[in-house]
Length: 282
Ligand SMILES: *[C@@H]1O[C@H](CO)[C@@H](O)[C@H](O)[C@H]1NC(C)=O
Ligand SMILES: *[C@@H]1O[C@H](CO)[C@@H](O)[C@H](O)[C@H]1NC(C)=O
Ligand SMILES: *[C@@H]1O[C@H](CO)[C@@H](O)[C@H](O)[C@H]1NC(C)=O
Ligand SMILES: *[C@@H]1O[C@H](CO)[C@@H](O)[C@H](O)[C@H]1NC(C)=O
Ligand SMILES: *[C@@H]1O[C@H](CO)[C@@H](O)[C@H](O)[C@H]1NC(C)=O
Ligand SMILES: *[C@@H]1O[C@H](CO)[C@@H](O)[C@H](O)[C@H]1NC(C)=O
Ligand SMILES: *[C@@H]1O[C@H](CO)[C@@H](O)[C@H](O)[C@H]1NC(C)=O
Ligand SMILES: *[C@@H]1O[C@H](CO)[C@@H](O)[C@H](O)[C@H]1NC(C)=O
View: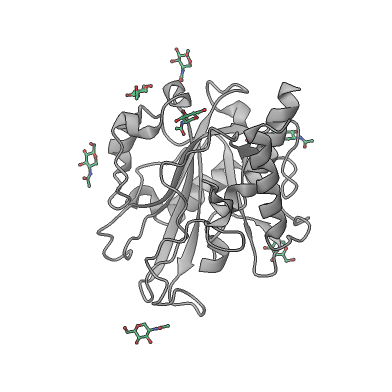
C-alpha cells in the first residue's frame, strides 16, 4: 500500500526526471581547508564589514549547475551568473568531527543572504535573506559524487519547512558586485519540533540583523560558510522585467507542479532523503 510519503517520493522522482539532465560530476573538485574559507571571507571584506569574524570548524560547500548542465562545486568567492545561482543543487560538508558537540543525529540550519542589498556602496537593506531552512542532517552512507570526501546535507520529507523559501538571486542592474553568503549552523535541539517563528522570527527578509537573530535562536557562531558573487555589470545579468519577482521553485517542473511545498531545486534532496528514510524503517 502506498503511504502519502511514498506518493510524494514518486511525484518528486517524476519531477526530478523532468529537470535538465546533469552531466556526470566534475572529476577535478578538491576539498579546501577551513583556513581557505576564513581567508576568503577576509579578502572579500565580508569580515569584518558584514560579520565580525568567521572561524569555520568545517568546510561547507554548495554545488550549482553551470550553463552546460554540469554540476560544479562552489568555491568561496566564485563569480556566478544569476542563472547559475538560481538553483543550488546540494549542500556538502567536510570535517564535522572537528566541530564541537556533533553527533550523527545533529540537525543543521542553512541560510543564503545578499550582504549587498540593494548595493554594496549603500547597503540599506543589508542583509537580504534569500533562504533559511532547518532540520538538515548528514546523509549516512553515500557521499557527494562531486566531492567524494564530503558528506551531503539533506532534509527528511515531512521535516522540510523552509522559514524563508528559496528566492533566486536577481540583484538590480548596475548595482555593482553583490556578495551572497551561505552559512551552516548547528541547530538548537528545540527546533527539531518547532519552527523558527516560535523564537519570534518575522518573515521580513530585508535588514536581517544576524547578531540579533543568533541571540533570538540561541545559536553559536556559524560552523561553516561560503559565498559567491554576482556582478550586475556583467553581460547577461538581471533584466528589468524579472527583477524583484519571486522565483521560488521556478524552472522546469517548478512551483506549480504537483502542489509540492518544496522549491524545485530541493526535489532531488527530498527524493533521496525519503529513500534513506524508507530504508531505515524497513
Ligand atoms: C574543473 O575544471 C574546469 C575546467 O576543466 C573548470 O572550469 C572548473 O572550475 C573546475 N572545477 C573545480 C571545482 O575546480
Ligand atoms: C565521506 O565523507 C566523510 C566526511 O567528510 C569522510 O570521513 C569519509 O572518508 C568519506 N567517505 C569516502 C568513501 O570517501
Ligand atoms: C581538523 O582540525 C585539524 C586541526 O586544526 C586539521 O589539521 C584538520 O585538517 C581538520 N580536519 C578537517 C577534516 O577539516
Ligand atoms: C556540549 O553539550 C553539552 C551537553 O549537551 C553541554 O553541556 C555543553 O555546553 C556543550 N558544549 C558546547 C561547546 O556547546
Ligand atoms: C523540523 O521538523 C519538524 C517536523 O519533523 C517540524 O515540526 C519543525 O518545525 C522543523 N523545524 C524547523 C526549524 O524547520
Ligand atoms: C543588531 O542587533 C544587535 C543586538 O541586538 C544590536 O546591538 C545592533 O545595534 C543591531 N544592529 C543594527 C544595525 O540594528
Ligand atoms: C531554544 O533554545 C534556545 C537556547 O538553546 C533559546 O535561546 C530559544 O529561545 C529556544 N527557543 C524556543 C522556541 O524555545
Ligand atoms: C532597464 O531599464 C532602463 C531604464 O528604466 C532601460 O534604459 C534599460 O534598457 C532596461 N534594460 C532592460 C534589459 O530592459
